[in-house]
Structures are given as C-alpha cells and as structure tokens.
Image (cartoon, rainbow over all chains, first blue to last red; front, side, top):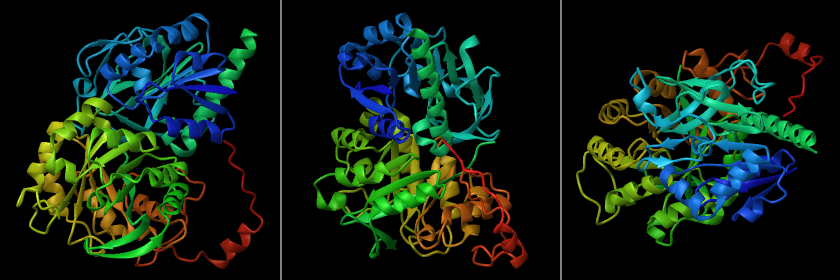
Length: 213
Length: 286
C-alpha cells in the first residue's frame, strides 16, 4: 500500500515513515502536492506550532489539494498530533490561525480546559477511553497506553470522537469519520500499541479503497 | 492516573556510548544505536541521547549518529549536544529526533529557546541543565554565567518556551548514590512544565524515590540499564510492585519474579521452571 507522508517542513517524517515501513507498507514522503497522486493513504504528521504549520501547508499548495483528495475524493487520511489539530477550524497557537476546517471544533490550550493543576505540555504515556464504534483501537488491551506530547488540544470533536484522554481535563484523543482518521498521540512513537493502531489504519484504508474501486 | 516515565539516557562521546562519571571520566560502552535498540525492545518509555563533547567540538550535532539511533527507536527520542541554532534543531529533527535538548545554547543564547519553540512548538524543546552540589548551574563554557541558580534558570527556560526540563547533577553523575531529591523538588516547585530528573540512579529504590517523593514526571536512568538482560522490564516490575505507576507493554513483564537486595530478579523455583517447558505462549502479531 502506498502511503504518502506530507512533508510540510514540520513533521517527524523519519519516525512516521519507519513505522509504516515496519508494517510492510510503502511510505513515500511527498514534498509537493503532486506527491499525493496515486497514494492509497495520506498521513499528515506533526511536530511544530499551528500557525507555522498552516502557513507552510498553504505555501506549498497542500491545503487545497489535501481537502480535494481527502474530503472530496475520499482518500483515507491519518492526522497525527499537530496533524490532527490542523483539521480543526482554528487554533490560537502562534496567533489565531484558521485550520483546514474539516472538523467542526476549535483547538484550545490544554491548560484552559484543566480543572486540576498538572505540568503542561502533557508529555508521556496515557490511557484512552474509547467510543464503542472506534475501529482504530481494535485489538488493543484494556490498559493500552499511548505517547502524548502536546500543549494544545481539541476539547470535543462531537460525533467524530473515537477516543478521549484525561489529563487534568478530558480532551479528544482520536477522531474517526469515514475515511478520516486522526490521533492526538504519537502512534509512531508508542511502541507495540502504536504499531497495532497503524496496522488498523492500513486495514481500514485498504477497505476504503476497495469499496471505492 | 498519569504514568511516570522511565527515560533511558545515553551519553555519547567521540561517537561512542559511554558511562559518564562525574562529568570527567568516561568508560566506553559501545555503539549508541545498539544501546538505544535494546532500551527500546526492553520497554523504555523514552530515550535521551546527549552528545557530550559536540559543543566543545564546535561542528554541530552528529546527524548520522542521530539517524542510526532513530532507526531502531520506536519511542520518543530526544537529542542534545552541539545545538547552536534553529537550523541545527531542524537538522536533528529531520534525522529522526522527536525533541531537541539545548544546554549551552540556553545559557549563551537564551533567545534560541524561544525561536525553537516558535518554530517547532514548546513540546519539542527540552532545556537540559547540569547542576553542581550547591544547586547552581554547571557549565564548562567560559562565557556561561557563573553562580546561576538552577531553579531560576529552569524557570527562565520554561518561560522562554522550553516544554520540559532535563535536570542532571554533576557530583551524582555515575555515582549510583541516588538522585538529588531536594534540588529536584525545589526546581519542580519553580516550573509548571514536566521535569526529567537525571543523575544518581544505582538501585531501583533510587528511581522509586525520585518518582514517588518528588513531583518529577520522569526519571532518567543511564548506566544502571546497561549491564543486564531486559533491564528496563526488570526495573519496571520492581517499581510497579513498589506502587509507582509505570507503563509495562513488553511481552516479558517479570511480574512473577522476586527481587534480591540489589533489585535484580531472583531465580524462579524449579517446579515453576519445569512447568514452563510445556507452556504455550501465544505469539503477539502486530
């Protein structure tokens, strides 16, 4: 399966590529929108600040081509960490900036949600609570932990919420809506639990492509 | 409950993983990528690689070394040593690091912490601080400020944009006598970002103490993990038994083993071993 990994000058591309290669997929880094052509799945990784990321996505022509492919043509998509937040309407990180707007929610500072004082950013391994219809987490043990490292979060993605996490506040840890998948944690850095989740994404992507064909 | 992190620390000198003793003696261990791979497979939560002579060498971070380490690492990787600019940060991130640690740069050019945070996000920037026994910041760099209080420096770094503080202790480095709990507690009190405590681990109880008795989010462990099979899993089994919430995600958990006084696992009774001969173990397919 050809997995295009969006290179917008921000993400931890090497880790993400490597995780997909481990699972037998064929990851290819796409530095321009033409690199997305023919991809069976698209992954938007993310390490960086929202404003800079959105500026880079727009400058490289990715913003429109991603919306075209993922929203209009239904190519399976996985957003990771900042790559999930970019799907929201807007974020205050680095100055209020509009996101891709695929999800009807805003990004907020995690600290603004918290009812309990804990160190921020939220760094480390945490458990998640799953929505019953989540497919990404099939096969994970009850107490599976995933690696989080973020300062901002989507509080609630409504019906698209596939999992929530609690760290001084409850926030959205994963999104699933048709061909659209996104996670706030880093599956590529979550050892076996993370690889299992990426495997589920590849399976779901394979199913979606077969349905479309 | 927030799980406490066990962070594997690999000091690198001249391209080789070393055991560091008091910041002035170094015993060679081997290739850093091998150390990282074992830590990863044995269930470490995170890995920090510090190239301790990169700043003195002056030619920036060793990118190839970062690539080699990252290739076998499925947990978050923090790389420090020789970071002089945002471009250096970008280079190590592109070569597979997930976070960047700055030490000398945070002392000499503090605005770089802010620039890095603006570019890559706060969660990506770790301020690495070495301390002396009197709680001041230690640096060999001639231009570094003298007598700077570690807690004040940590707070200033966090204020500028560091998302985590990595606090090491020169006198405790490699001494195996336990962490500097008082200083760690004091620095935690001055910051609102997570702190990784390093320096002094020689027994699982030292790790328990720093995680249970201080607000530190993570314990950095170096040499203690280098000389035993499955060392990370064995340490975590001990910690979980002592009531410290840690992540255990390896196929081997050592949950049923007893430990000796040094924290090593004790031999299982013969009857248990005999039974194991015929036990079927389900293969974990990812």
